[in-house]
Image (cartoon, rainbow, N blue to C red; front, top):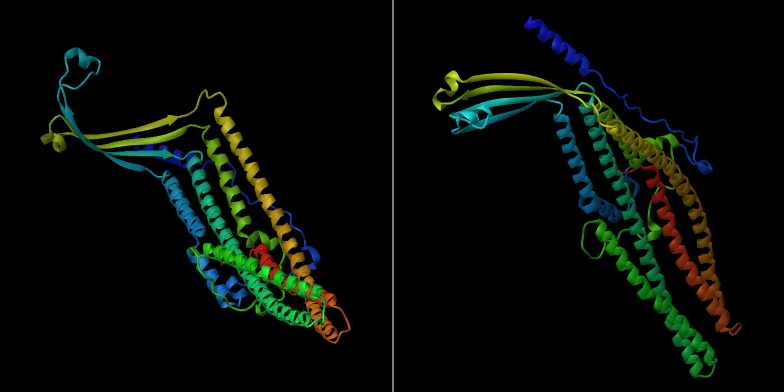
Amino acid sequence: MTKQLSIFTLSALLLFGSCRVSKSYEQPQTTTPAAYADNANADTTPLVKWFDLFKDTALQTIIKTTLDNNRNLQLASARVLEAQMQADIIKINQYPSFNYQLQAGGGTAGTDALKVAGGLNSAVFKAAGVLNWEIDLWGKLRGATASARAQILAVDENKNALKVSLVAEAASLYFILRDLDNRLLIAQRTLASRKESTKIITQRYEKGYISELDRYQAVQQEAQAAALIPNISRQIVQTENAINLLMGKSSGTVSRGSSLFNQVMPPNIPAGLPSQLLLRRPDIRASEKALNAQYEKIGVAEASRYPSFSLTGLLGFASPQLGSLVSNGFVANGFAGLVGPLFQFGQNYKRVQVERIRTQQAQLQYEQAVLASFADVNNALIANKTFAEEYANRKIQADAGRKALELSNARYNFGYTSYLEVLTQENSLFDAELQESVLMQQKLNALVSLYRALGGGWE
């Protein structure tokens, strides 16, 4: 009879253990556009890694150092380890726990005290192993474990998203730095040219060939170029500090590689299909895993409304004398307990509703992340196209400005025009060269932004 009862009990536990009060999680279906704006290249070729995208060895070193030493990334890695440990702790709750119990003591109590369990009238020695096991009838523990596992993936994807951000920021700052270097050279070259012009014009003024107004205008032009040099130098140091911070360094000069205009990058980056963003971008994957983790919590809260079944066992020895503890003191006890809510005034029900509402919020956050990703790609695509067009025109402007200044200087030297024409051409060329440099930097960073928006190259 006892054997049959044991078989029946085990079968019942297996049956109840397979019951879950919540549905299995299903990844949400998201509507994606058929194509990106502006008829982007829909080639599905996988995106290359960041190290393969950039050919500048100095930039590659900056990226590698950033991924190795950045403090925020190290913090993100520590959070992944923390999530893994938390998930292991939650998973272990599904299994029986084994503890030991050792006790020794004694006392004296009168007859009346013993009647009300007021103490012991002898010594007592106990040594036992204790088993505790909560049977997961309704999937509460399994749901908590599934939620923790999904949370690990969410935290890990957040770390990958941080990698994307750090690499893109490092590349962006590096191109800004090379732009500032180039603008500093332009300012220094312009200053040297204007100093020579001021010297020549001053000599002409002293000989009475030109008016004093020309000399003052030349001094103004020289001071304008000179004032720009400390401004750019300050920005260079600030940009170097920002790059060093990314690399986990305190300060120092950042090594340079190719010049701004000698950077080699692919002219076109395949955008791929819009649906690929859901797999490529780690921030979207992190949001989806966070939704998964939150969804599992609904089942945990729902299971809390049902009774929990637990088994407790004790196996060991107990005796009033230490010498007879093992020989005559064998103890074996087993208990089964059923605990469930009765009158909670709707608290457990409201806990379920809270988790459902939180899941709705996570769903909206996921959908928002998907929508934002498409907007990022479309913005990056249009920026990549328009910055390239704008730079091409700025280059034409700068080339024409150099020729125009050369002609104006010749006309002025032969007395065919006033110095005002030369000043106008100098200012136009100075502005055009600076804008040409800025637009080249923006053109390069548009490619970085596009790569970042597509979610590629983070490995």
